[in-house]
Image (tube, rainbow, N blue to C red; front, side, top):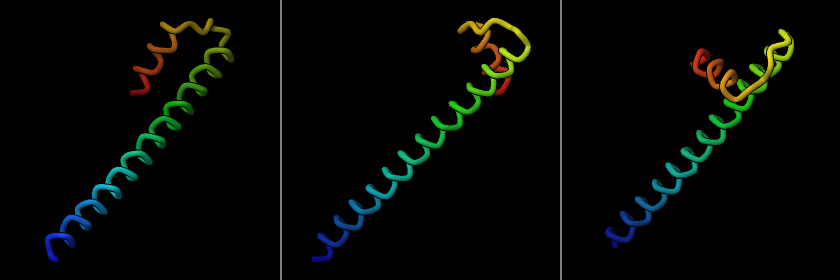
Length: 63
C-alpha cells in the first residue's frame, strides 16, 4: 500500500508543480504585455513610428 501512497504523492506533487509553472507563464505573458504597451505608448508620445524593428530594439533595451 505504501507504493500507492508514494505514487499518489508523486502525482500530486507533479500537478502542483505543473500549476505553478502555468501560473508563472501567465505572469510572464502579462508582464511582457505591459512592457510592450509601455514601449508603444512612449514611442507614440515621442512621435516615433511604431515598427516591429523599433519595438524589438526597445524590448531588448528593457531586458
